[in-house]
Length: 239
Image 1 (cartoon, rainbow, N blue to C red):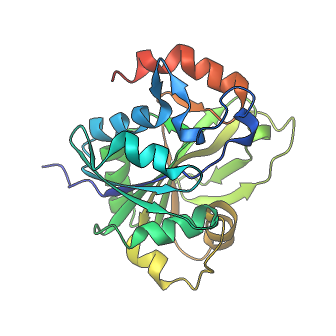
Image 2 (image 1 turned 90 degrees about the horizontal axis):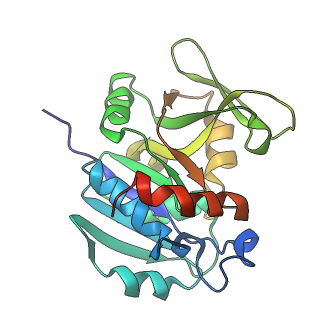
């Protein structure tokens, strides 16, 4: 029997400054692809992976998202939180955490889609007794993103900063499973980065693991990749 899927949090508060010339006056997660907002593809991906409850963390022009989706999308139950001021990716997760109820939470970036098998990732997370599991995507050059280094058991042992010409390696794919009580035990500030102030600061304290995903990956943060997503994603995730 499959374990029930955790509640999910989507960080969808971004302005998308690098996309402003291509997609103006919209939250980044609402950038259109094939006439449908990118966020619909993320929600469909979660529905395909048996998630039931999703909290969307919003900021810039939040009303465009709440009015478009309402309280449900397909089989998903949706709820929303709105940041009065930017809290960083970590602060947004902590605020959204109060609207989730599962022992673990799935966290996704609202401008990235990584088609990983979430039930399988959850099983690894549970079996390894990880506090945090990060989906890792292999790229020819980690320079744009920075690399995540694991040992032979898959435990994360280092994060490498962005540096050009670093070659092939694993990057943070923007999909996380985090044990709820672990986050509650940390004395974290109201505003912080989940990547720098949580992952990079605490990975050596407890068990952080990487999950190696081989599915489709796209980050729409720059115009060239957004254009590629427009061509590819409607055929990858069928709405």
